[in-house]
Length: 174
Image (cartoon, rainbow, N blue to C red; front, side):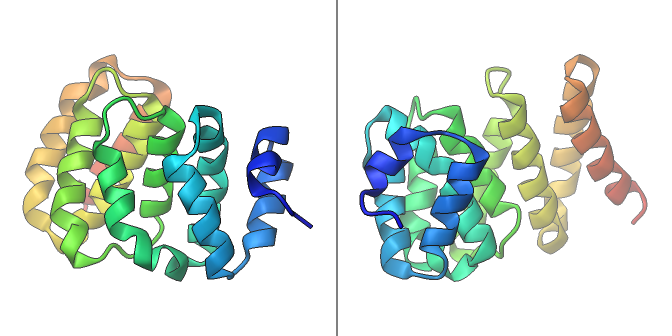
């Protein structure tokens, strides 16, 4: 039983702790709201530790994020946000249906993350997946996405190459 979510987040940063928090939240909107508030507004370490369970909660129960879309997307625009925030925000976005009202803005964000040489590889990889998912609805972004991938492939890591090549395969088999 979790009685102090902030203290729980700070006590340990592990997969087991993440799973405990996700189980505690389950489908409870109030508990998720508490976690999401810490994710957006907590001190640096709290935000970092909240990011992982936020993503897993939304992947398990996508409806939990419904009232937080605007804040989630706006948070991705903040300069200097921790990689864990970007990575876990994009992780959850790759697995759920994105409301149409946010698709364009999210495409811009993901293209910027995927193209940036300063971004962490996991952020870039998740951004590619989100863009790949959106390309099914908006095939006109495929040429730009192909160029982005092909420009980055020669000097990218194996993780990026793997994700990028899988995405390219889907484009060239259409």
